[in-house]
Amino acid sequence: MKSELFQFSSSQPELERHLSVTIKLFDAHLSSLTKTEALVLCCYLSHPDEPHKSLAARLGKSRVNTTKLLNASAYNAVDAYLTYATALIQQGNA
Image (cartoon, rainbow, N blue to C red; front, side, top):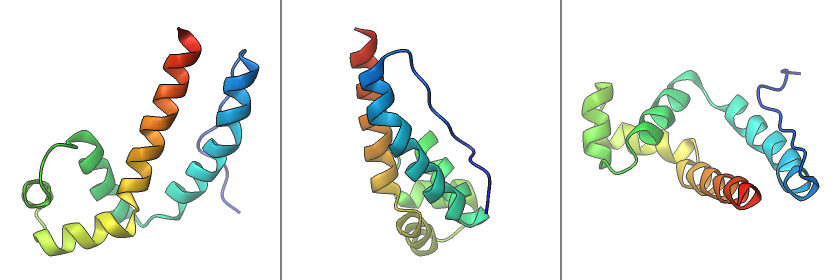
């Protein structure tokens, strides 16, 4: 069993309740990615507005391969989760 890479703790009970469990699921998902899937996902997260063709050029891969790797990494779900977590954290700090 792999160790957890991400853990979450907050002095705000609601934020702790919402994110502590979902961070564990997020961590399990990221830990299951291959090195190449993680690299392509990282590139996407660093340049979210770039088309797959541009990301492929950055990575030295074909557009088709890049899209397959992004889909395998569930990049849309990862992006949605990060948006959700960020909104909860910002809401808790307001």
